[in-house]
Image 1 (cartoon, rainbow, N blue to C red):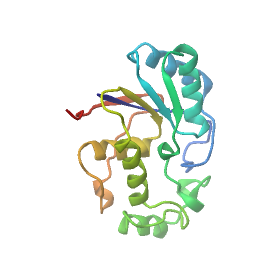
Image 2: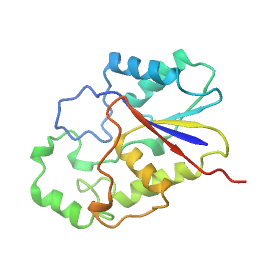
Image 3: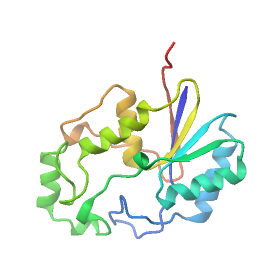
Length: 185
């Protein structure tokens, strides 16, 4: 089976702002462009599962208008990391000591004091990943952090301890990647 991992279109928020769980809209034209491209590629029978945050829900709705034949559902496990008190702040305003504390205890540190830890994100995404059904291609409309976690999980990595183990790359806004997954015999 193939797992498509699509990142929402560019959010309507100033550059440099931490917006993980903040529910911001995405650029409508870029969302439509992404939906159009995906609509022509997704095979019949693909399941579409998306984060409930509006930047992902917008893309799911735009795709649904083009491909009403696909099955759609929302899954809160596909939300971006909760950055706690950092949400809505400029990254440049986060104290270096706060960032260092996260780096030093990357797996367990509650980001922004009250947000999620990387371990919690990995467990949440693993739960969604483990629920993928057999031979059915699936599209996740989600966020960069979830895509990075899914890529690790697909390689058999369920936990990481250090920040340097976290993938740097993720699809750009409105882009996607695919994972070929083994299906049970």
